[in-house]
Amino acid sequence: MSKKKNAPRENGAPAARHEGSGPAGAGVVSRRRLIGSAGAAGAAGLVLGAAGGAGGYAATRGDAPTPLTAVGSTEAMFHGKHQAGITTPLQARGHLIAFDLVPGAGRREAAALMRRWSAAAERLMAGEPSDSQGHDTGVALDAGPSSLTVTFGFGRTFFTRTGLSGHRPPALDPLPAFSSDHLDPKRSEGDLWVQIGADDALVAFHALRALQKEAGSTARVRWQMNGFNRTPGTTAQPMTTRNLMGQVDGTNNPKPAESDFEQRIFVPSGGASEYAWLAGGSYAVVRRIRMLLDDWEELTVGRQEQVIGRRKADGAPLSGGSENTEMDLDEAGPDGRLLIPDNAHARISSPEKNGGAAMLRRPFSYHDGISDDGTPDAGLLFICWQADPFKGFIPVQRKLDRGDALSPFIRHEASGLFAVPGGAASGEYVGQRLLEA
Image (cartoon, rainbow, N blue to C red; front, side, top):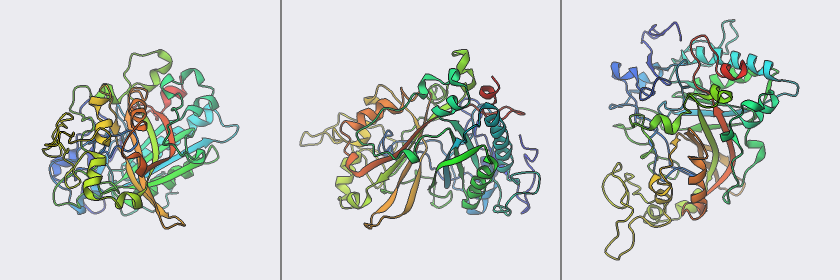
């Protein structure tokens, strides 16, 4: 834990911390509430691919909007039961990056890399320079922590390359193929995966650059993606964010206060000894989902609402009520037709239609420019968290694959599945329990 827990920053304002990785139900408790700087609600998203239409609230920021002058002061905790960046409230900027170990690099080199990365992440999340040797780039020199989180995961191939195949959990088996897939293998999978999030673009980039440099000669970048969300404090009151389709994006995610939240999202302890290193961790499914916005925007608002199953203005289900009203999947209109159509995205992906399958959706939007034909290369960096992807993402995506009304307007272009260890205890580095097993 940082020695600067409540140390004043150069601007004289103390840094407020939020527990990105505390015990059950405490993973999103934020000390920013104590200083009156809670951020705008912005949790997880439109369940493109395997998440439900306007369905998913990863974690709320609090009951009051964050003044922009306070955005930089919030600080996530590096050490804890879970890694930060899973239940942490949605951040304004994000970077996803996958690495492959270089030929000849094995378990020893991977352990040294995770030790370096963990040390850098702890310093960066505390708003400190990335190293203690004076080699920091100075990109974020004037900024506070800005809710920076750095989250590390291991891909299936990591275990083969490090001689740890016996410790690779069965839930890390390859995802099945889906009919909506148009996957680019060069932008999929990877030995190591890093998720970076922050409420300031320079702080996020600073972390990205520092971790890339720390990889040194041990690992090379396989792919990298950049994302964004609404900045805390940009709305008059806390509200659920919207995605690039304009839909309210984050309503029915599992909530940390729910009694079964931990068992749905995090891997429990007490399993087979060879997988004990993953206790308190989770599985991240990562999908780059391109939105075919030109086609989508040709639809009337009414038709868009039929595709999703929720009102565009406020995210309320078409069966009535407000955003957080439970969907009535049996409610019919005067003409006898279901108010929420049979193929509506929100209906097909709802837990009620999937045996209670649930995942914590925590995406970023992305925009990578304009294609030669004039269409925007834009959409969703879909990230969902669950204790077992074969009980979370996969069954829901299979059902969506068979008849989701949203499918003609999206295209899955990259994919990855990563085992994300639990948080590091004080004095540990992330993944130590695996690499030093």
